[in-house]
Amino acid sequence: MEAVPWTLPKLDPVTGEAMVDEDGQPLYEGYCIDLIDKIAEKMGFDYEIVTPKTGDFGKRLANGSWDGVVGDLMTGETDLAVSALIMTAEREEVIDFVAPYFEQTGILIVIRKPIRKTSLFKFMTVLRTEVWLSIVGALLLTGFMIWLLEKYSPYSARNNPEAYPYPCREFTLKESFWFALTSFTPQGGGEAPKALSGRTLVAAYWLFVVLMLATFTANLAAFLTVERMQTPVSSLEQLARQSRINYTVVEGSTVHQYFINMKLAEDTLYRVWKEITLNATSDQAQYRVWDYPIREQYGHILLAINASGTVPDAKTGFQQVNEHSEADFAFIHDSAEVKYEVTRNCNITEVGEVFADQPYAIAVQQGSRLQEDLSRTLLILQKERFLEQLTAKYWNETIRQSCPDADESEGITLESLGGVFIATLFGLGLAMVTLAWEVFYYKRKEKNKVEVLPRDMEKVAFERSLPKKIKDNVKKLRKRKNPVKNVTIGDSFKPVSFIGGYAKNDYLP
Image (cartoon, rainbow, N blue to C red; front, side):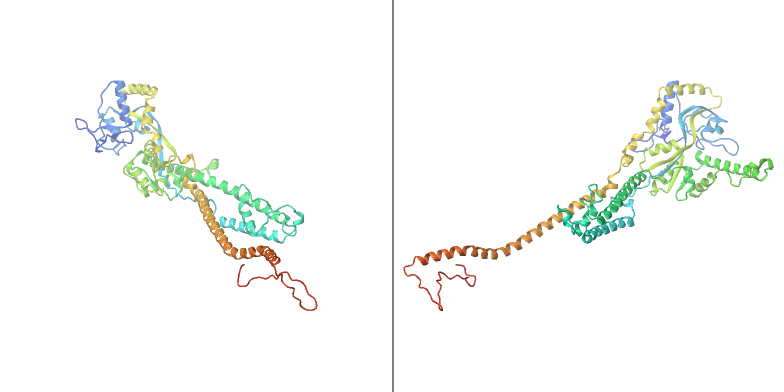
């Protein structure tokens, strides 16, 4: 009977088609094939693999007979069954089981991994938009108030320089906003205002900054941690209580029968409780309770399964889970097969714990002489740790390490905090643009100075050279043979040695 990974048709690695032997019989591989090969080697017998003509593993028919693997053992068509056959009390009534060869298996839920919405600025979503706007508003208001208090307070360093003879920080409007902004950094805002009113405002603002930083840090850590651990449901109870996620089982499987049986058990218990409650005598007053003491969940689960529709096989169930990228569909199936599929499919994950544990065991005909020999051989293989080797071979967790999200739990990815680096790069780019503007402004200012400077320099040079020229002219006059006659103006006279003046029309001597 085919079951993943217990018994599978052996496929050609080139063509992908099922392989057959010399007699045209199909070849198989898997856990059970490796196990029966080892048992046959230990016990020294040959075997032939046959599949049931009707049914799968076996279920009781309306006439009391069985089909599938169990039916073939009952009719004697097969001597032993090495397959994914679950040991149940109902089957033990018609066949015998050897000691279990596999650890306890049960039922498990598999669901599509939620697709995480990647955002480089995910850290910004820790706080809502109105909170970020409130923080910016508080920063701007505090910066303006610091400037206002520093300007009008009579005890500020600006208005009371006698009390602060040493150089103090001047809180202009720009400097006040810079102080409010840098207060959010570990370095701090620097020198605080001197006036008591300004210091009171700064102390209240620093308390606000400390609380906001602590709140953001704590929520960011919790936000990123919960994001990696988040799954839509984590148990069968949660799956039964919600209505967004649909789920199904393989039709006619042991899992399907399990929920049917549990639904019948719930109905029976409710009927018995109702009879006890309604017909209770005065001595049975303790049974007269208003609420039903047992939670009815399997009835809801079975209704949801019927509404979603069962699937014909496990392959279809896993395929439907994989197609629902919004993680709104679950498949409830055998835990061993679910874990095998999870190790080979990076898109799905198991949810919750295994429930309804039951073992896998080798089955033989009732009263078969093979039962004791098989039990002894299995004990030998268990001591040799052969069964552990088979488990490690087919449920190899190292294969899953190749998945892109295999190391999600090891740390925060760059996709979650990439915005921090982008913000840093934006700051670097803005700094370079500001530097270019500063250089351009400085060169333009220096160029304007150079244009005004020559006219002023000519005037200064002329004024500096004038006394020297006057002295030279006086010496020349004294050396003349015919001295200059004195000129008398009015009743008195004054000797005039020279007459100075400025040239017109920008003439320079």
